[in-house]
Length: 174
Image (cartoon, rainbow, N blue to C red):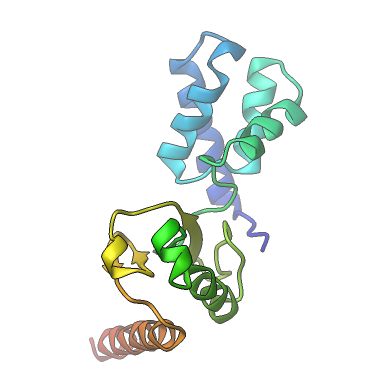
């Protein structure tokens, strides 16, 4: 799913990127650390930041894009407010982690590495999270949800929707 930034977001992206580039004036030998700092600052590496880096370092945009897409540490989409991470370590995989991942993709309408249009949820596949006895495991904003099933995925999403509705109603009452 391709999310586009607003004009204000793009301006902020360019400002943050230029600030990081000023601090790292060592040139293209610092490309990966620069991209890591951009992601740390913004939560992902947006296209506008990649173009700015390429321009400032005088390297082809395709080279910057190649680095960002080669290393799986880099995100191309902003993380959602609710970051869903499905463990696919050995124990989780053997206990159906791939089924849980597929369920999250279908329920959220996104693929791994993507964010929902409303930026509420992002979905990631992760290696072992160290909770093997509770497999299969999903983390939501670092909160462990053990022994996941498709029904539990539905329950978590339903609880989230109920909480969001409650917050909306309380906000309207004020």
